[in-house]
Length: 288
Image (tube, rainbow, N blue to C red; front, side, top):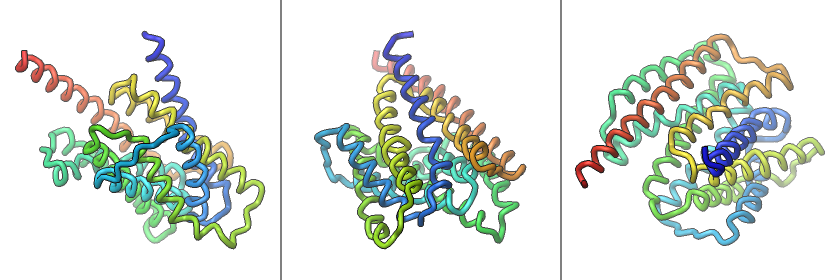
């Protein structure tokens, strides 16, 4: 294996590990969701901007919509973590590939594949288990927000497909800026404890800023399937950190539902990648 590939794998695993600390840090920071979103975004904006140095904002419809969806995604994830368990929040957000498949039919005019239909059915079953125990409770609202955060993540993915000659880093950076602007008014009048300040710094600089920088570097040397599979370290580690630190444990039905969702997404990713490789080989033969 080439040195660049090994380095990329290390970077993407590190990115997933950093992202996985989000659930724990959000539980430890005792502040309103929008206050966290705004203050974290200010720090993450500075970190990513220092890395990019001279960002190229095109302000195209695709970039603006992608940035808006990214902002909604990170805000939704924070709100979800405050209302439901960290496990529920991250796994439901990871349902994004299913929403991409559904949105692709209407926005990209793509035909839905047989494996997408099966994946949608199984993910729906898995998600249903999350809601069975939480009807009428705060967790139910948190689960809804987590699902919407996954839909927003799907919106980011769709928008990036339209940005063939643009960098995804600029789109996420613009999303950080949007979040900072929206959340800025909620910072005033709030008392930050030393633990809150430390948590916000870690969330902005490491959990979000550096994590996405590492991801953007790694993705250049990995194929789509490798990137997806390595990033599944995030939803696995996220609830583990929270359980070890504060003892939060999702219900048995949520654990079963989460396993169904994650396994379905993994299997779908493998099948989808194989289908894409076959299609590319056929295209090469036709051109030859």
